[in-house]
Image 1 (cartoon, helix red, strand yellow):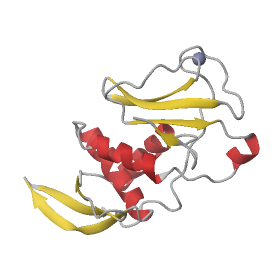
Image 2 (cartoon, rainbow, N blue to C red):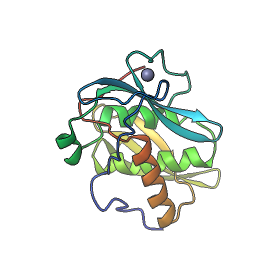
Image 3 (spheres, rainbow, N blue to C red):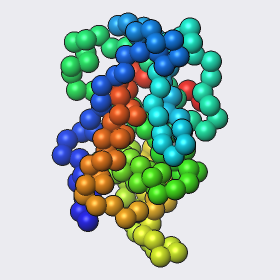
Length: 177
Ligand SMILES: [Zn+2]
């Protein structure tokens, strides 16, 4: 498997869903909304809420942030998911069980490496699994990332899954919780 550079370009941010998951109202340009990545069964699901319907994030949410719906023009520009929110998701995934979580976390770690939020600090083996050690550039915090069995196709698929979960995530988005 080649994972040296799985992202041909910067991480793609997918399309924003545009509707409140609770009342179905369209979220208008400039409107504040809340986004949650939560677990439903074995899957992670991204939901957006308007301010009226927002209550609080479920305890097991992987990511929660508040942002404003970008203007149509801004939506067409390339955007970058903020490192703070990505790091939050990455850290919470460490506690999530299962192979899907391990794959998502590994691919996210590659993205954070590419963004230089994390730095490669070597490899080790533990319980028959390859573990990549990564160091957070800002404070030298160390993270172990299990390298799950991943084909190049898996990496593409997981990257798309991440893009869907993080759709519309703007640089100015504010992580919550
Ligand atoms: Zn609503």
